[in-house]
Length: 488
Image (cartoon, rainbow, N blue to C red; front, top):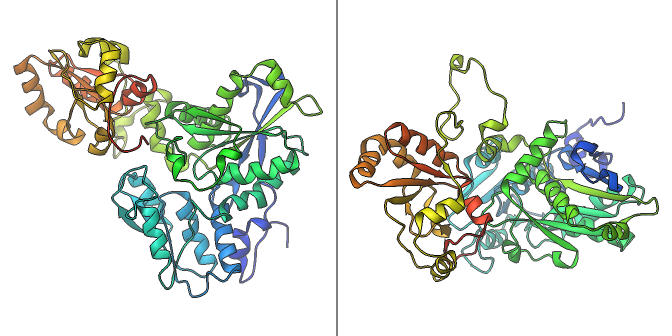
């Protein structure tokens, strides 16, 4: 048989075993994607989607099952349970069968997107929805994490426990760290990874620092209210039990648009890097832009180069719709003769501002809608007190109730997007006209709100849309009414 062929009764088990694969590809970025190349900085992407299950989480999933089998914890187990709606439980479901366990139950937050649930179902994962915030309290007995722990103590069940099981970071000490050290011939000087469970940075960073204590590690964290799959804000890292803070030398916050745009740029040169990989690279580029020449000199290896490795956890394929949502239709080639499609593409969130510029920036909205200085408005918001907006403006937030309760513009009113779409012409526009109101529609990223504003303009109302949505408003640090729960 030729190399890289898996055959016989144990072929699938052998194929899924990370020990039986060559080091995953590591690709250097071209100069047009590396603005620091002339400074002697070389940037490599470690492409974890070349694993059999196409995601980085399959390494800790395999290692957690391997260690459980080795210490006897798998004896008598017929079902796995994990608080997860992403790559970890997806990997456990498939790998579990290789270890003789046919059933895996995912405890998923009711805030998860349907596309992720469909992918879990595609791979045969059972799902139970848990009603909880995106940032669950790990000390709350009702949280999905603790429900999974309790179920894992029942006869025949096992909770792998990605948030506390040391086999998670140990997987990266076992595989990822040694591969990077070998592939760079020991010349790596900096490691970059997004922080989710933190297992990747903890395990890989621990291994590399043991080889060379001078290696710098940078953890990339999510800006509040900026969704990116698999990574967390600094606040959300509080539920992680691994000692990530002793491994991460620096933290860099990155937002949604930067993550998806960087990922898109990489995909278009042939590197199929998902949003979390774009997120990590965007964090690196931001970090390097703040480094002085003397800082870079301290990180150079004996060759005089700064060799950086960025972890790319998975591909863009599970998140295709999200690219259009967060970057907008203008970021993509047009479709000619689209009317000939049997089922035309829905354009309710993706549009062009051909007829009207209905956007209003956060600063302009702040000036138009409120009658007080920003400092006074900030005090009102800090005390979670609502305030009225300046007539004739009315701020209409079309996000979900959970998102609205978590944070919203002061004085705004919430209406379900579906409700306002159905009743815009018959109910809402007549009410706006009758009361002489000018609506400013608000959503998370400015897509749905612009679609509504365009339609309202066609119906004779001078509607506006908050440009960039609550993501941009939050990024600028403008005052918001915030709930008691943590900011996701």
